[in-house]
Structure formats: C-alpha cells, structure tokens
Amino acid sequence: MVSGSREYELVLIGATGYTGKLAAEWVHTRLPADLKWAIVGRNTKKLQAVVEDLSKLDANRKKPDVLTVNLTKDELDPLARKTRLILTTVGPYMFHGEPVLAACAENGTHYLDCTGEIPWYYDMVARYDEVAKRNGAIIIPQCGLDSVPADISSYVLAKHIRKTLQAPTSSVTMTLYAFKTGVSGGTSATALNLFSKYSLKHLGESMKPYSISPVKPTAPSKPLKGESFLHRIFQLPYISELGGIQTTGTMAAVDTCIVHRSWGLFETIAKTSSQSDLSYGSKFRFTEYMRSKSLIGAASWKFGFNLIGLLLAIPITRWILSPFIRRFVVPAQGEGPSEEERKNDFMSYRSIGIADTPKQEKVMAKLEFAYGAYVVTGLTLAAAADVILRGDLKGTEAGSLGGGILTPATLGDQYVEKLREFGIKIRVGSE
Image (cartoon, rainbow, N blue to C red):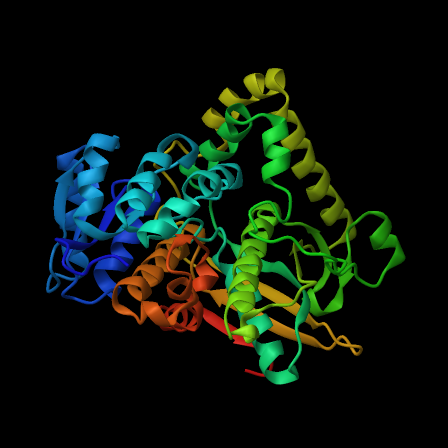
C-alpha cells in the first residue's frame, strides 16, 4: 500500500477546469482541515485564482499548495512519488489520462478520475491492472456521475438481498427517474472525439456489457422487460416500479460495463476468500434506462439518440456536424452551467433488484441528490478520496484486493456512508 510518509496526501490535477474547480471546493470544505494537498496545472496565475476562491469559501482551512507541472512522464513520475493520491479531472482522458494513470500505477500511488470513456478504461485495464496490483495502487476511474449512482445502487441492493433474503441477486434495473442538470464543454468534447479516436471494432468490443469484468457469467439472467407487449415490440419497457415507460439511458452502456466489473471483482474476492457474501450472484445482470412520460417521447428520444450516434460514427457526417455542434449546441471546453443556472438542479435514480430465488422477490432502492451532474461529480470524487486517505482502507474490498484498476463499489460500506454524509440520499428496501 501507499506509504503515509509522502509530502502530500492528495494532489488535484485540473483545478482550473469546470469540474476540477467543483472537486476542489468539495475537497477544501469537506475533507479534514489538516489535509496536506496541492492543486496542479500549467498556469500558475489561474491556479492562484482558484486558491483565492477556495479561501472565500472557508478562510480558516489550510490552503492547498500550487504546483506547476506538465502532463509528461518526466514530471508526473516525481509528482506521483510525493503524494498518496492523485485526483485528475483533465479530459478527454483518451488524450490526457494515460500518463497520469500510468505514473500512479507504476509508483504505487492511488488514483481517482471522472472519465466516462469505456474504450479508454478498457485499454487501461489491459495495460496497467497488473502493474497497479503489483505496486499496491488503488486506481478508480469513473468515480463521478459516471458511474457512481449505478455502481452504488447495485452494490447496496445486492448486499441488502443477500442480508435479508439470504439469496444472490439475479438482476438490477436502474432508471434515471427525474432530473434537472446542464452539460459542460468537457463532456461534449469527449463525446465528439470518441468516434474519431477509436475504430468501430474497438468501440464495439470495449463496450460489450462484460468487456472489463475479470470473469464472465456462465448464464446471465435476462433483462427486466416490463409488462406490456406493445412496449416490448419497440424495446421500450413499461416497468411500473420504476415509474412507467422506459427509454434509452444516456449512460447505460457506460454504467453497465462498470457495474459488471464490480460484479466480477466481487466474484473474484468471494471465490478466493471466505467472503462469499460479497458475491452478487453468478447470474447477475445490470440494465439501465431513463424514465419517459409517454410512449411517443420515449420512442423519439431513443430514435434521436441512436441517430446521433450513427451520424457521429460515420466520418463524413461527423466532419460536417462536429463544428456546428461545438459552435452552436454545447459549451466550450472548460465551461459549463453557471452557479445561477445550477440552482434547483437535482437528480433522482430508482432501481429494482430481483433475488435469484423461486419467488424472485423484488427490492427497491432510491439514490437522490440536490445537485447537478458536475457538482455531484466533485462530491463523489472528494468522498472517495476521504475514504482512501482517512478511512479504514484495509477494511474495504479495494483494500482486500490490494490494488489494481477497481471501481467505486469496491470502497464498500464506508463509501456509501461517506456519500450519505456529503448529502446523497441512498435508501434501500424499507429504509
């Protein structure tokens, strides 16, 4: 494990960006006041401005140090050796993420990010999982809105079913039930660059549901389809427990891969230790939707979502559309919703877990927060950092694994409680 004698506990890369500033605010205001940390970038003036803004939030707390570092191996390796944890919000990760992750894996430094780029994650698992294990580095990508709600909802449901019904879980189905949130330029840049960076073959292989799971299911359960024949024809299920008509979830493919990696990691622990209760179940499957108010609305959203994906996948149409989208549709990179625009933001998820029993008992879970996507990403990153740095890390599943490229759920119950402490409502069963 990472030595506690390093100069810093946490280094945040990307604090001058939109999501990075929000993460810095959560770290400054909610992590222990004696935290030894620094913010890192290339522009000292902009970094100093962030420090001054943090001081306005809480002048009694210790200011972070400012370090000027380029994202090159020569400068990242020494940086990784002087801190216990690096948190980076600099994306797209397909262009900027690997040098940081590699430095952490190779130098035994813990790592957090908020990517949603499964093809990149897929490559990082292949290249650095064993390196991180060997050096005791806990590497947790996608520890933001992608994919904490899905991963933690699945974790608490599977654990609840195991505890109350003494049974494995056959499936978890989650929906984005209601929301108000904006989009940042960084997220938009990632979506536009994904198809130009990777071949369709690589995208298809890396986005398979169990692509990054260390084990594969022998006979996964079937997705929850809903009650209406009409809705089944259009692949728009009606699931009453999740609010009715369901359509394509914007993060469904991404979240599914992460949840299934958690499942695979827990299966590995269960089979190699006495902790059999950590297993979700050999047939486990995760499915994600977004609730719609009407069949027409659901069908329109699904058609539009798939059409945009198709157009971006074709080089000529991507070349034509990208400048228009960047100029007129989405914010510039580094920008996002203003504080005024973020007022009254919220997101609400509902999930249903089905026990792998003859009766197929159902258990409901809710995960809700009064923040938008980017504020909550800062929250989930800061909460994970708190668990890793000041929690009982050895008592988590991540600690049991000893290192590697892991998932938010491997931080276990401590992470669930820290998320609750920071303001996320997580309820399961009759809670």
